[in-house]
Image (cartoon, rainbow, N blue to C red; front, side, top):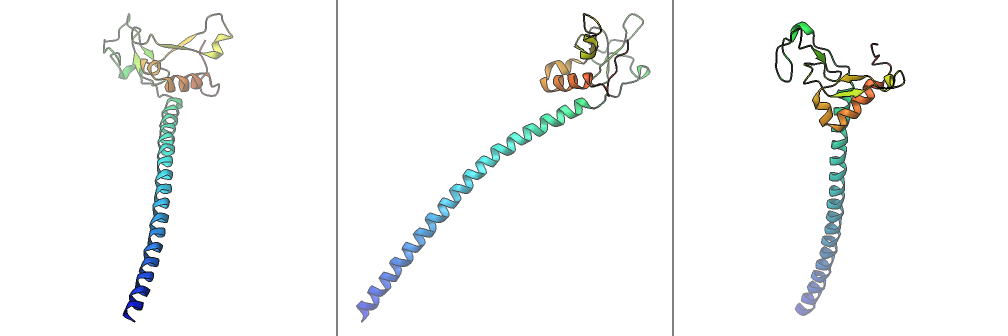
Length: 153
């Protein structure tokens, strides 16, 4: 009888071990699927974060710049030279800061002005826009948008 009980116990033990191995295999597969999904989601989240950053940057460039009052800025915002009768102030259409002629050489053509004359009228923009493509595209849209900008002729 002891041998029968031992055999019965061995069969039960073998069945339980087999069942546990199946469960372990199931949980391993589930973990691998979850890790794969997590890796995919990490890529999606990273891409979404980059898009959100680009949109945030573009949105900030699209907002109307508050022009700094001439009386508050005695020096160029870039080179810090003092403004005078011969060194005039130029407002950046993007950020509203004031630059001298030499520091405001970056310009962007106004699409609305291109139809009025052979050479498009350029507006002063700061050097930051020329180095950042997202800002340049956003500023181009902002400058051509009829509700936000009317060129003074």
